[in-house]
Image (tube, rainbow, N blue to C red):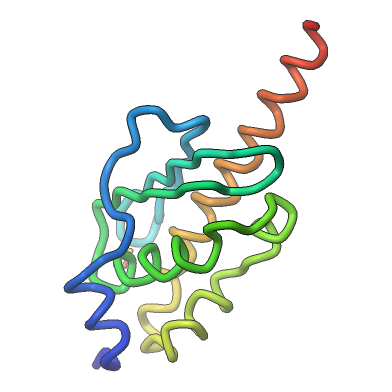
Amino acid sequence: MYNEKVIEHFTNPRNAGEMPDADVVGEAGNFKCGDIMKIYLKIDGDRIADIKFQTFGCGAAIASSSVLTELVKGKTLEEAQRITNKDVAEELGGLPPLKMHCSNLAADALKDAIKRYLEKKKEEEAQS
Ligand code: FES
C-alpha cells in the first residue's frame, strides 16, 4: 500500500532522534490514532540550521517526518511555516488516502515549534 519512496524513508529515516541542544521543541498529537510527534529545531538567524524528529507513530508518520526534515533544513522560518501536509505527501510521491492524516503530525509539530520559537523571541525582546 505504500510506494517505494515512503518505504525507503520509513526504513531509513533521515534526521531521526533527539536534539539535546535544540533551540525549541514542537509537539503535535493525532487524536485519531493517539500518536505523537516531536520536532527539534536549531535556528541560526532566521534559518533552520538543523532539525530532528521523534515520533511514536506509524510508518507513514515516520516517512512524513523524515521527508519534512529534508524539506525544511536551510529554509527560513517563514518559508518553513508555509509547508503543508499536502507538500509533505507530494514529496513522498503520495500516501494512501487513509494515511493522509498521518502527514499532519510532522507539519503540525513543525508549525508548533516555529510558533513557540517566535513567542520565545518576542518575550526575550520584551525583557531586554
Ligand atoms: Fe497514527 Fe499514522 S496512524 S500517525
